[in-house]
Image 1: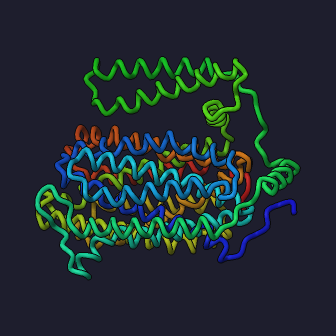
Image 2: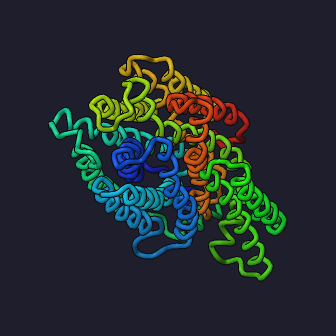
Image 3: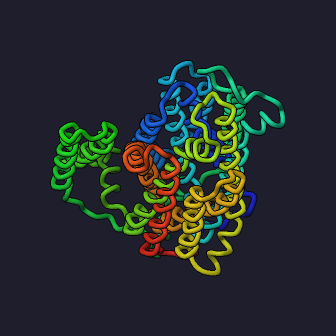
Amino acid sequence: MHSKPQLGFWQIWNLCFGFFGIQFGFALQNANVSRIFQILGAPIEEIPILWVAAPITGLLIQPVIGYMSDKTWHRNGRRRPYILCGAIAATLALLVMPNSPELWIAAGMLWVLDASLNIALAPSIAMVSDMLPDKQRSAGFSMQSFFIGVSAVVASALPWILNNWLDIANTAPQGHVPPSVTYAFYIGAAILLLSLLWSAYSTPEYSPEQMATFQRWRDEQKLDVIEQQYTGFSRWGTIFLAAGIIATALIPIASLDHKLYVLSLGVVLFGLLQLAAGTLQNAGRTDNALYQITRDMVLMPRTMRQLAIVQCLSWFALFSMWIYTTAAVTSHHYHSTDPTSLAYNQGADWVGILFAAYNGFAALAAVAIPLLVRKTNRKITHMINLCFGALGLISFLFIEDPHWLLLAMVGVGFAWASILALPLAMLTSALPPAKMGVYAGIYNFFIVIPQILASSILALVVSKFFGGQPIYAIVCAGGFMILAAIATAFVDDTSNS
């Protein structure tokens, strides 16, 4: 055996089934956390910054977990131990979140929940890449998109279903989370844990000896990234450190919004990491996570750099939508900003239906995308789907009847399915198998950085330029999806299988 054998349909099904549970947690988080924050007293302009600690944690955790899973092998497998740890921690966070008595506790639980889901996510992505040959990766990641779509339909609509089908109340006294939301989180905790357990224990991982065989075969095919010596740690570390310090000093001097400290301090941290990696390199101490992750980050393959731009633009649009859709729909379409009012809660419940709808359309799109890829290629397919998403988001401004927003969700669903599948398929074809875990973690940077940007500057932009009207954050999200489609045209797709 030289190249990886192709897996059957049900083997791919079991391999990807864990994404059903991971997305259930993310969907409950995306559709309900802003609502919980408002219920616990957070003003609308402070909601984005409350989201920021969670992605920062994910930014730090994912590459470390990926690096560790690359180096791990024992009787429980390579990726499996990390998937299970993330699953257990995320389950506990889902149980605690809706019972938070104070805003700061809810913000902390978001931190724990997001970090735990990311701990499970990076090894899960790497495991799909480990198990599937190049020819099956588009189909594998489309299967992942299918599970994500179906899961998010149920999770996003769950509070509405519990209220309208089981007559569980969707309102509560001030400062308390409605029972429909609370029970939705309990159900989500059980689904997340069980689905990840099923996927982890129904998929036998390849041994280190088998992975070494695949590695040698790829070496013979000249598909791996050539190891390079990097000598720019000190130079670029100094530049980033100086730029971050200057930016941090300018924020109070120019009376800029304090949320921008998140960006400036992030630049400082990146500079310090490069300087530390340079020091380790000079001392000959290169067999450690800090050096290896930093080195792999600055020497990432060309295709990965190009996809970084596409993903940052795409995920900035998505986080804009997730953060602001509840506020946009309740204020623009239901004409209420009072979280205790019936109109607000009807609007918030309808957002859950809209989120369920775009995920349902994403599940359908996951079936159509491989067919469109075969007719065109991965780049063209992704560009088309991103344009569909842009049209859907921009139409929020012009649609008056909230029921017609379901039509906008068709485009968003196709974009969402494509964002989850095709960039990963293009990326993993360009990566060395021995570093799939660490690069899966670094890949998460292109998801987390736009979340930090959105959390830091969206409130400022909406307040200063759009008169505090959150509907325009949704329109801006559509504009960023158009930019992502343009950036996709410049990606070097090394394999079009």
